[in-house]
Amino acid sequence: MRVKEITAWQVRIPLKKPIQHASHTRTETDNIVIRVVLDDGTDGFGEGVPREYVTGETIDSALALLQRSDLSAQLEDCPSFKSALTMIERLRLAPIAGDERGCQGNGARCAIELALLDAFGKHFQHPISDVTKLMAHDDLYEPHDRVRYSGAITSSQGMKARFAAWKMWIYGFRQLKIKVAIAGQDDVDRVGAIRRRVGPRMDLRIDANEAWTPNNVRARILELKPFNITSVEQPIPHEEVAVLREVRRDVGVPIMLDESLCGRIDAERAVDGETCDLFNLRLSKCGGFIASLRLAQFAKKQRLGYQLGCQIGETAILSAAGRHFACSVRDIRYLEGSYDKHLVRENLATGDITFAWGGWAPALAGPGLGITVDPVALERVAVRKEVLLG
Image (tube, rainbow, N blue to C red; front, side, top):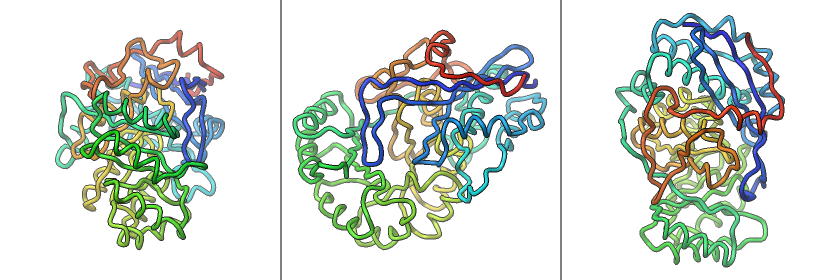
């Protein structure tokens, strides 16, 4: 079975509310959606979320990369799902000048990979969660009938932050991430107010989105440590991440890398530099499902933890891929995603897979991603369309 058509769309979807953190404010999301069609007419969809401030890629650069990559020469005839997985993992996009971290095409690669996995999964009747079973069975595979997502409080302050905390508690979340280091906000007052309202048993972690500096990072973490925070995500800019080796020893709070963890090169540097305790794996940021699996394997081998994160503005396509990852991978410390109906005005699927009460969500049934993309919704939010093959 071979691929005969590949089409890419840029989609622009308004968010239901502005999302602000220390490095960016977003009111809409620009994503890439790819459709793959096989010889027998089976199709599959994938999604990538290029973010210049994360991996250095834009929508324009991602689409240009896909256009100049020799995809047709790499897309072999696949007689089985296993052979398709081998082909998909070997798939390489065109080289990018100056990309010494090897991550500036990750959003594009995630989109094409997920579309291929969805199409071949449908054809061979395999859910995408079987990727973990077939490629990482011995060290990562653990099937789950349902998983539990964590909540997040972004830029809310004052009474809005207190109300948001109450909502998270009433909704039944057991884990909560708080965005900190936002200009004009007092983190000690804000995190303390949230802690008082969610109670002592809520697992609280914080994310500074690179906003602190080597000079103040210790003090910022230590002043929030009394609120029993369980991890600190990306406290300083990527360029200064080496200082975290000493910070980890000084503060006694686990450090998670996000913007500094976009691929294997970053992961190896993090281990060599002893700069973190946890990896934040995000499918688009890390180059897709298989690449994220490999990073989880690497983290486990190095006795580091990992969470499955998400990009702001993911639609149901990436949400479904994340669900398959979460429902098949063991030892995920924190789980983010599936915010669909709470965040995007078009989720692009005919059904709703948003998490329910308490953050709980079931494994997805059916082959491939287990969702049906709505072509009318896709065309409604499309900004441009490009044919990559066929």
